[in-house]
Image 1 (cartoon, rainbow, N blue to C red):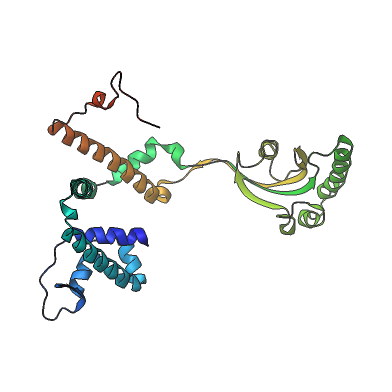
Image 2: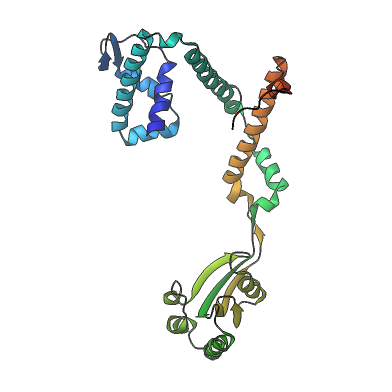
Length: 296
């Protein structure tokens, strides 16, 4: 909310008061200054869509912003009475603030808002970067977990024997979900029949990941990881595919817009610097030999 208010107040600083119509209600007065409802709404209209939407959804924001504007204006007038606006350090900072604002607005109006993206641009991007739109190989797995962890070799063998006994029952056709509910020590999945759902390569522990992607759908097998033993059932597999163009079109538009925006802005700024014959003398910023280095 603080940042929102500050940006709103900064906007006020760059807009002069308009004349007030007789039927335009006054929403604030301070000193000889009046602010009308139409002026307030006009200034709010300069905010970006997200901020305007927030004000529409929370009308109390409008009152808070108006109050903040009044406070800042009154305090700024007091500062002018004390000649703060004539101090060189403040003049320099105001100049930087104005330059930043003007530069950003100029680029937004002269570059960003003039960018046009065609259907051909989108299709070219889609064809040029197919890997960006690939759906990786996926596997759907259930498991029954037997905790062994850093147990002794003898204890691990006992846990393995228990897992092998349950494996045999699963392979003989007993309901996998019921076996998971009864025996699995994975508390997050045992009540769901051991369901791990769909996941791509690299998501699980390496030993588990490598084993399940090597198995065929319908296979029930026992595998070991550093955590213990897993009876796994590979339910389904999906081969890697490239998402169709129409499905990712909006996603491509956002990426192309960002790429175009960066390229256009970089070119625009570079061209402006060349026309201004702008030069940097970076060597002048380096400490000269014999100078005392700045304190750390």
